[in-house]
Image 1 (cartoon, rainbow, N blue to C red):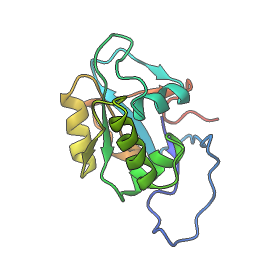
Image 2 (image 1 turned 180 degrees about the vertical axis):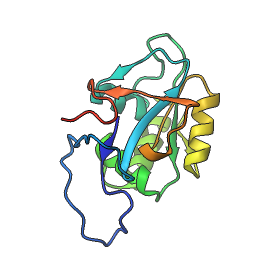
Image 3 (image 1 turned 120 degrees about the vertical axis):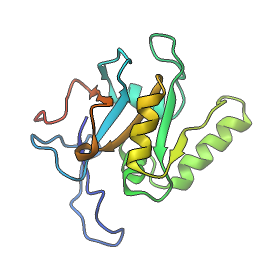
Length: 159
């Protein structure tokens, strides 16, 4: 899935507004995000609702009963901010942290997402952990991971 979001602009820069339903583009650009999974994962497509449930640990197993391991970029990274806003529906990193603290306190969540400090570490983690799901900029995807469709849209699909 490629989400066209201005993730490379400084926080105080004027940016184009992107609807929360996201906009998909025919040619991947530097700011587009790709949702990636381990190559052995049989899942080809997720709805945005399913994706949100995975990232918020509301679902903790794939349809194959394999445990899901969510990987997030480190707090403050532009990619993380885009995922929090578009997938998780949260405006601040603090909201995400609070969500997991509450879930952990109420014993609803056993494992929080893994925070990784670079795209190369994200790709390496997803490539090496069979139940992993994460995200990178579309121009950073390599053959060691697989990009999945979201709402039946593949990277580069118009609409």
